[in-house]
Amino acid sequence: MLTLEPMFVTIEKEKKVLNNISREERAMYDNHYLTQKIRQYCAARGWYGVDLRGPEWDTEVAENDPRRTTFTFPPATVDQLQETETLLGFALPPFLRMLYAEIANGGFGPAYGLRGAVGGFADATDTIVQQYQGLCEGRSLLNFDLEAEIAQKHGEIVVPFDQWLRGLFSLCEWGCAIQICQNSATGRLYRVEPSGDGYHITYEAESLEEWLERWMHAELYAQSRQ
Image (tube, rainbow, N blue to C red; front, side, top):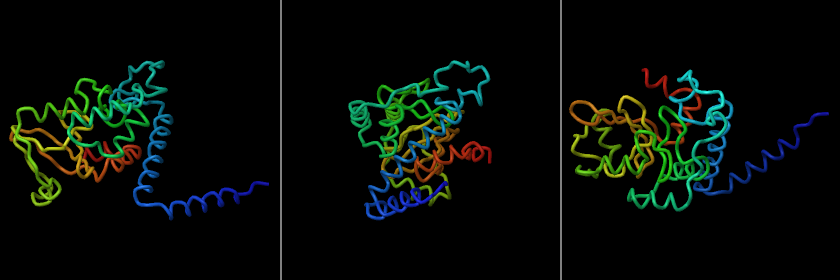
C-alpha cells in the first residue's frame, strides 16, 4: 500500500531547517535549487546551448550536436573567477558566480546566451570582461544611482555614447545590438539599446534569478514583443 507519510516527514523536516537558517543561507539554498532547475530544464528540452543557435530557432542543428546532451563549457575554476573579478574591478553578483562555478562558464540560456567569465563563452561578442572593458575604454565612467535615475526619468535614461556606467556589465547579447546588463552593485538587470542619441537603458528584471525563471516559463520573448 502506497503511503505518503515518509514524504510529509521529509517536508516537515525541511521546513524546520529552513525556518532556522539566516537570510543569506536561505538565499544560498534557493540559488542551489534554481541551478538544479536550470539543468532539468535544459535536459527536458534536449538543448544545453544558447537559444538562438538551438533547434527551436535553427532547423539545421545536427541530431548529434553535443549541445543536445551537455553544456559546451565546463564550470569556471576558482582562479578563472578570481581573475574575472580582478579584471572587472568588482565582485560578481553571487548567483552569477554560482552559475559559472556550478553549471557552466557561459554559453547557455536566453537569446545568444550568457557571456562567460575568463576562459568561458565569448562567441562573437566577447566574455563579460572583454565586453565591459570595451565599453569602459575611452569613455567617462558615471557613478550614480541607476535605479533612482530611471525612476525619475519615467522608466528610461539615455547615456551618451562617450559615457558608460561603472559596474554595469553585459550578461547577454539579445540581438539587434541590444544588451541585457547587470548592475554589479544591486544585481538588477537592465536592457540597453543603442539609438541615435546614445544608450537607452530601461529596467529588465529585479535579479538574474527572476530573469532566468521567466526564461524557463517562456515569458522573456513574449515580453520583448510587447
